[in-house]
Image (cartoon, rainbow, N blue to C red; front, side, top):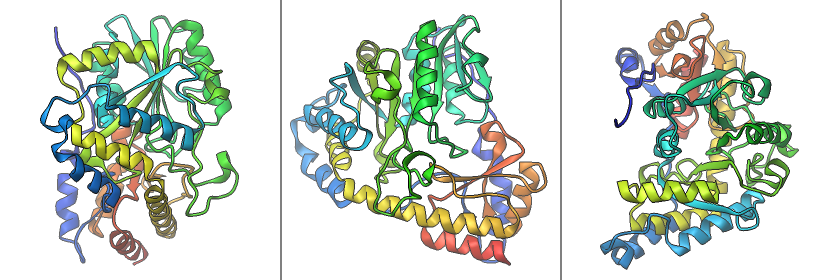
Length: 384
């Protein structure tokens, strides 16, 4: 039957009119809407891409499961940054063409259909819902997926989306809360789908102690950590991306790690439909995973930008604070309606993301992925 139809308010063309207004403002438009990186790709990544440009994995067909070097780099990265031994918990990995593709195809590759239910947070990344719709399965939105009573006894639940740190809210789940989700999902035979793409972007002491120095890479709890999954990857899949940590959004470098039987099945289908990362990009991805010093530099950039943005938005009248994690400042609209605030902000040149895109029309999301200059300009506009 192919892909099913989907419906979503997540349509960037809806903010075109606000961008026209912002461009006409004094100083022009400052776009804090889309979370697209603006900083340089690390030298290590660019060199690795160039060196691999004529490798056998470039002029020949690349491996769906990833080169041996890439798979080793992913395992090393999990050990170094997430305190996870993939081999010990019987986990496998497969690269994906960016994390959005991994999210959008997840329900389809897990063979979910019309009688199946996928749980997700009410306020969340829109592609969770779109991916479930594409598979023809049902979406169940709950206020908090850690409140397992809201979904555990619902007939047909086959998977639960977890996003920590969360896009858009920045919320971070503790290991205890994640463990509760994993345990409840296993009781009913459901899969935990843990989107951890911002795992190294945590900012507050709620999870890892101190507020965090600029060179710290302390990560948020992982669904594959022993204290969450109890030493087994069964029924758990984790997604991660290099888009933000290494500014590689255009490289489309991400991966899924977890339950080896689920990964094996998904990999077989991915091979048949050609969802494969190009060979030279796999080499660049391995370099990015190993270059933790560049990740620390980027971490420091984002922390500084978030601090400036939070202070400016607070001065403008928004009630906000530094997010626990991720790269966005999530605020309640001053008017109570995201579109009304979007109009007022556009008049001073600033474009945010309407909260309706994420399931909360009373809120707004401001991205800290803009340049230092853009963030400084936004702060000036908000102070006028």
